[in-house]
Structures are given as structure tokens and as C-alpha cells.
Length: 168
Image 1 (cartoon, rainbow, N blue to C red):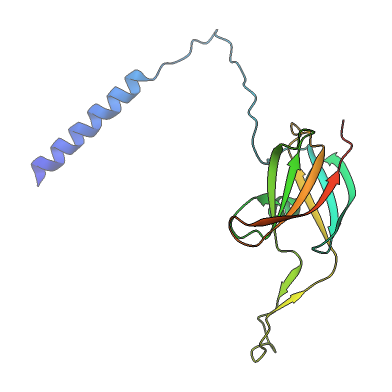
Image 2: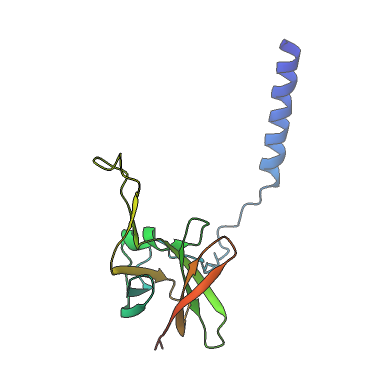
């Protein structure tokens, strides 16, 4: 047992020394070049993003407002990259109708009531009326339209509405 432990410690020391010798240190007088990194989603620490406020009821949608500003934490949580649990999807498209970015908004038009006084009920979901939806995209993306789609399965979706945008 002791021999195996000694061999393992020697091996780890050799690996550590090999890694530390291969690491190159930059000279002090060499300039540091900053590269700009573009993320697919909006960083919560960034102060500028394109924010779109949409009102809809599941079958029709209108654009209430679009502006540049700091997105709220709630906006970043509710409109996220598309997952399999999202029933509604916002697709931001360019002038050639190519998808620039897709955001999933879940199902904001259905309320789930599995709480007190609903234990004996046969229906646990209820449709709600108009909902306000906020979505934030990075500043580098300049869409010309927003398409709202409803998913019926993993691969089956239907386009519900298209909103034209006037963005410089």
C-alpha cells in the first residue's frame, strides 16, 4: 500500500512540473490584446440590450414597445434560449427571413392550479387572458421581424403571428 502511494505522489509531482514548465509567461512589456466576445444570449451584467415588450393572448400578438436599455432579471429568466419545455417561441428574423435568434417563453397563457381546494378537481390548468411578454436580445442582433410560433410537439410548430420591426 505504501509503495503505491509513493508512486502516485511522484507521478502527480511529475505531471504538475510538466504542466507548469509548459505554461508560457508573457513578458511584462508585451501588450495585452482584448478580444470582444459575442454571446448568443444577453449577459445579466451588461447595461445595453434590445428589449421588446409584446402583448398577446396565445392567438394574436402586438408589439407594445421596443427600446434599448438594461434588461431586468425577470425578463432574462422568462425569455431564455429554447428548451423542450417551451410551448411558445419567439424567432427574431432578418430582412431575408433568416432566423437570427430564438427565445423560448414557456406557456404564459396557461395557469396551473394544483394547490389547496383543487385536490378533488378534474381540471388543473386554466387559460388566462392577455399577458405581457418581455424579451431581450444582444445589441449585435438587428432583426427586421419577430415570428411567434406555438409548438405542438418536439418537431411540430405552427406560426401564429409575425410582427414587423423598424430598427436602425
